[in-house]
Amino acid sequence: MITAHDPVSGSGSWLEKQWYCQGLWQLVLLPLSVLFRLLSALRRLAFRQGWMASERLPVPVIVVGNITVGGSGKTPLVLWLAQFLRQQGYRPGIVSRGYGSNAEKARVVGLLDDPASSGDEPVLLARNSACPVWVGSNRVAAGRALLVANPDCDVILCDDGLQHYRLRRDIEIAVVDGRRRFGNGRLLPAGPLREGLWRLRQVDAVVVNGGDALNNLQAAQFRMHLNGVLLRNLRSGEKRLVAELGGLKLHALAGIGHPQRFFEHLRSLGLDFVAHVFPDHHAYRPGDLDWPDADALLMTEKDAVKCAAFADERYWALPVAAEMDPAFGPEILKLLRKRDGREIA
Image 1: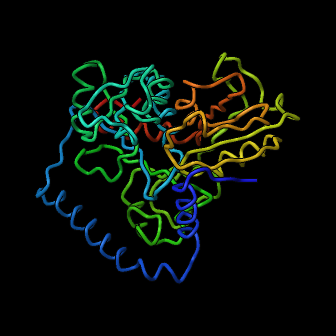
Image 2: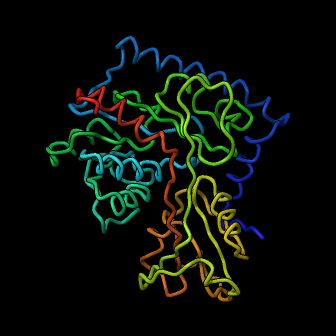
């Protein structure tokens, strides 16, 4: 059973479903998609010709993004990269727009920050990456401020900045949802694409999150899977295996770009539950989760950072970690060392 709890959620789910099918209604939006394509092309041309200024930071920049609207697994990949680079002797920092954040000017994200002011994903990154995290609508300014505050930082990870051409980048990584792929293949608003499929030919690496590999792809391609079996209680911090909750009356909620991925993961672990879909980046209130019959409420870590303030002992988060193709790390390390001038071992 799946329910939606907000008018925005209902309409958003309907629109997303239309993006991932073919329908006559899309013909009405095709002129707007053509206009979107034209404006996007003019914007790219403006940056390429120098009519709009792009800026380079004094350290290498790795951008992790996608070409579709909605979640594809960027944040777990950024966390994986942060840990991997630290293990290799780098000192990474992370910059983000901070969707849902009220930060216009660049500022640091603290471990105890309110997601309503800093954004849910930046708070999650700050708590789990062991790296400095800065947010701001101007990612160049956020990167410069991060480097001033952390002069030992020698590489910047940019979360969700593939189309932010104002910030020059040294390595581009595009994340693709291996199951949903590119929907109907149309640009916004008739489809889910922010840029055409041609964009994948320009990046340094394509990471496919779940599902099958992409065909006819010229860029280097790597596989990623998200796994997690250990729940964390939001109130006590206790950790329990997912299987230990079997037999209880469970409700699961997700306010992420692709909630079905979370629900499918729980079902693959043998759980039976009532699923509740909320809009991506939803700002939860206690009344949103008023299910008296629930023995336990299960949610993603992204949802948990916004529910922790009012959580009781029934609230559990399921952290997931990226499992990467073994060839991915060495490839990124090779590209990075080539960009920053370090000798390749």
